[in-house]
Picture 1 (cartoon, rainbow, N blue to C red):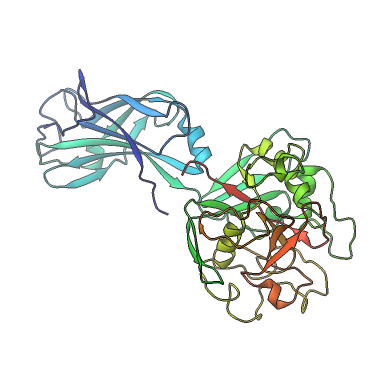
Picture 2: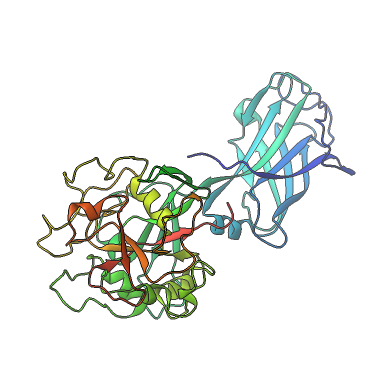
Length: 421
């Protein structure tokens, strides 16, 4: 996965002089790798990311100094001000400390593997040691720069653990670079846990040949929200009848826009993204600290298409093992994840239950990060359902629902918005 590369910088040129107008210091380095002087080494420090706090996390007070007499070790210290761990959680990234030595003449870089000491990225002062002899390093140049980086890598998956139930004050949030052994398509991740996958921004072509561009990455639910997941958050299951499919891993239905977001604050989209505290989204936001919501219509179609331009995300005809709809569903919903996923690993984007979106039903909006009509009588729903014909299950078909309508075919999936990207 790509590394993020937006940085704040703090440079050390000598023990008494600090400046952003930085130049590489010249350090004599004999062939066996020892330093011919015992002064401060040239140091470049980089901490990734534009931070979301009033005072952004920074690294200052950086020093790097050889052992004297030389024993092949370099002592490096630095001070972190601000909470990198909190920032990493908010931006959904993994952080790692990387130390390297750059030969400015030979234009070569050696990444440290023999590090010891306080390697954490917590706030405070840290002291680490690089055992260069243990790596067999031999610098022939007198111009060597030591660099310390806090690198960030986007987390591909976000998993919310709901198992503590509706009385919990918080839900653990765990990030994954890759699916766990056995994958996510098992009952655990469709009942007591919510799984979302990160999608980078991009552009797709609408059916009317207009283009939509999403500039920010976001997380999209891998599965439709299930009845057990709703129950763990809200305390009850709205699907009282077995006629249209009832069970822990069946998609929740008989839900409305108002139940999901609330009928007061939650009804004000797109002028406000706030939700009612007693709604599904309100409770989930409070217990995770994440910006969770319904997808915009643009986010939904981008995720559904998964890079395709065809009528369905698998082709131009209603064929294959992709959707529960009128011809194969026996007029019932089915457990989520039992059909083939799209190219981005999202299941049931076509069929099973209609998926509610944020937007009012109005003129189809396009352009950059569209939010849809400013007002209307109906909310948009997408994807078709177990009773739909093939035409309603396409990647572009727009259904409608009253905000208060607890339709037996209405369901939804989650989006996790990333604010500081």
